[in-house]
Picture: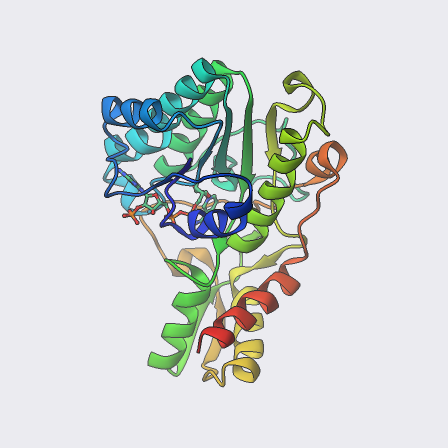
Length: 294
Ligand SMILES: NC(=O)c1ccc[n+]([C@@H]2O[C@H](COP(=O)([O-])OP(=O)(O)OC[C@H]3O[C@@H](n4cnc5c(N)ncnc54)[C@H](OP(=O)(O)O)[C@@H]3O)[C@@H](O)[C@H]2O)c1
């Protein structure tokens, strides 16, 4: 069962998991995830062996004024899905965010670092992590960051659109993170789930838990935008606006964001032997996909 199969990550999961067995895709038309009874009923009738939860309330700024809804989707819904998975002894895969950290470090965050979200979205996602961990069983939580891909609402597609509309853009240069593609996330998830199903990683107590999962390297939003336009000019004949680096304080938003939220993937690598590609190569691949779709 792929919950949120119309989202950025959900779409890629649905593609890559096509060979593992029959898939039940769940989108907003099949269920309102804010409704626990409806969600429970849906899982019971589908009776899945694996639940991949790619759904979330991801509107970081809007969450500041929609706290209740953000918690219903980011805490309530994974709790229900994890409970139903536990009852069925199904594998439950959930995703979380770098925004559970406050950004106060200057070296990559590891799984055991203390979380301290700066905004409602981060706090609701942290509550979701904790709910899933409390329920336990056969679960995986993958914390990722700065997710983008060929579809959906994301920084890459916003930049390409703004590049067509404007001659100059000011981009924040003092927030550093790890841009990660939906394609790479789906690929890594697939490799791990396949390995678990095939019994390559041992029993649940050997692998269940929380892991960071991001593309390699780090960059600021400004550096990311610069890389996007440099390659998009060549691959998509995209216009290149003049880019100006600015400080976060010059671009006020309702939700505060961490200054440094790069995640270390050492635990993922050591436990599963899986490593996502560096962000530059993942960007290249995504632009190639967009070129192919032109
Ligand atoms: N995007 C990022 O930068 C980022 C960064 C770090 C971590 N993550 C995490 O990565 C995971 C995947 O994110 P994503 O970027 O792929 O998310 P996304 O593109 O926003 O997709 C989320 C999906 O959940 C669905 N959904 C939301 N509320 C729902 C409801 N009440 N009922 C039914 N469906 C509902 C959305 O449907 P609608 O489109 O109809 O609302 C959408 O299809 C999430 O756990 C997210 O928190 C994302």
